[in-house]
Amino acid sequence: MNPPLADLRVIDLSSVIAGPNCARYLADFGADVIKVERPDGDGLRRMAWRDPRDDEGLWWKLVNRNKRTIALDLRDDADRDVLWRLLDDADVLVENFRPGTLERLDLGPDELLARNPRLVVTRVTGFGQDGPYSARPGFATVAEGMSGFAALNGEPDGAPLPPPIALTDEVTGLAAAFATLVAVHSGEGQVVDVNLLESMMQMMGPLFSVYALRGEQQPRLGGGLPYTVPRGTYRCRDGGWVAVSTSSEGVARRVLEMIGVGDDARFATFEGRAGHREELERVMVAWCGERTRDEVIAAFGAADAAVGPVLDMADLAVDPHLAARRAIANVGDTPMQSLIARLSATPGVLRWPGRTLDADGGQIRREGWGDDRRAGGRRVSRPGRPGS
Image (cartoon, rainbow, N blue to C red; front, side, top):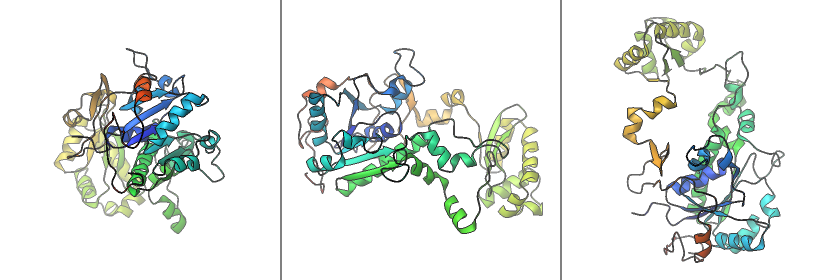
């Protein structure tokens, strides 16, 4: 069975994480993604941790899995001709240059769509293609600071904190992949404008409405939420930690009964619990501190309440649920996250990790071109799409 996006050809001109993640999600479900790099390679190959077996970057192997690679010098006329032939035959272009860069390369949307009217041009930037900030360099940490996220993250008397992972890059990659497929489904060649700041703002829930309509700002509460108490991480007697949420009334009642304050009128409602946060949190901290992590988890289980152990990478590597779900997969010989979602009838396929520089350049240059060529020469049809 062909994977669901096997008729899609994607040219990935982007670099580092957010843009390449967009193309990676398409590749995971079968798109023929051609990763175009500079002759000296994408900087992600050399960023952070290396695979001790071949000195290749582990970020690279994850973010650029399932893609074919070709190295092109866009200042060289012959290589630019190769790129144009790829774009003439493509369904999607993903790029994350600063606004205006693609145009300076004579690869702007007007030129691209004039030659290939069905092309979807997905542009991933820090702040979008227009607006006062559009020319600024965009990085995830900046977006986390400007989106409202960092202001909420951290202890009440501490500094605002960005996350210790590439959260915005991951979120933006997902948003860009979703928007790209919406555009492809529309059947119209067009530009998809996705940016780090607005993707992260989508994670803020109703906080913009809360401020506009009520004049309120959510305070920084560590791991707490202003409307759910108890909620957060709690240390147990043996040094283990658990994560707890009581975000439904039924669960909250059962947890309060379990920790011995079920008849306390102060904690009878969401508003009451939020208004007496410190008192209730002290009870929860003490209750967990008197029990081992296994005892806490067992008690929550008996009460049909939500709890989980706080796990690190060593714990996740041997977790039986993740093993049963095959949530960590060997792609080639490199362990990494598996597919982001399971499709029962048309699943994605993990084929290979990010490949060596220009690994497929010779083959890509030799391939035929035109609308009847896709993924090794198969003829495909795209009902309802211009030019099909």
